[in-house]
Image 1 (cartoon, rainbow, N blue to C red):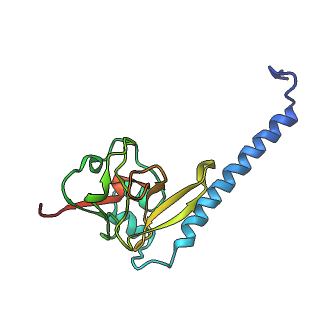
Image 2: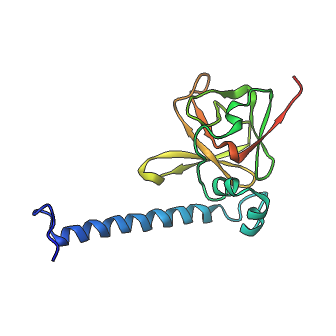
Image 3: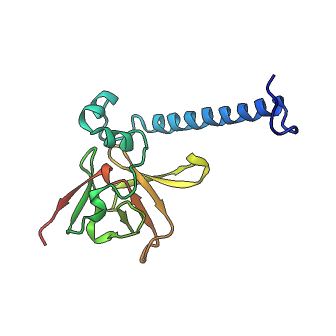
Length: 172
């Protein structure tokens, strides 16, 4: 029989702790599934999962359809400084103007305000914290999160995944 290094830690306590971690993992997975299911059937642009996989790159699919996050400092859109519009990579809806973009130093493209009627915001309690998730209003694609530490005039930081967007330059 294996002896535990901490005599105060019983096998029962160890099994109990393992069970709690397992239950939390199941709850977290169920929340994520339910969050995705809630949006089904509520958007102007709807596609089957197979259609989304065919239309999007694997990275775009992971972010837009599975609420993933790209690695920081990897998006070319973080360093996009031309005048133009940032559109949803899933449905081409105009989301953000370059005039509202700023360098947040976080490694993701950041904006202090979206375009009118472009995004929806929902409570996100994943990863044991409270955040506000930002999605495309037209297709429901996950874009990123919004935080209250941005610049004036709104004080908001829309921290977006660059892979979830495309950029269309406008005439200077």
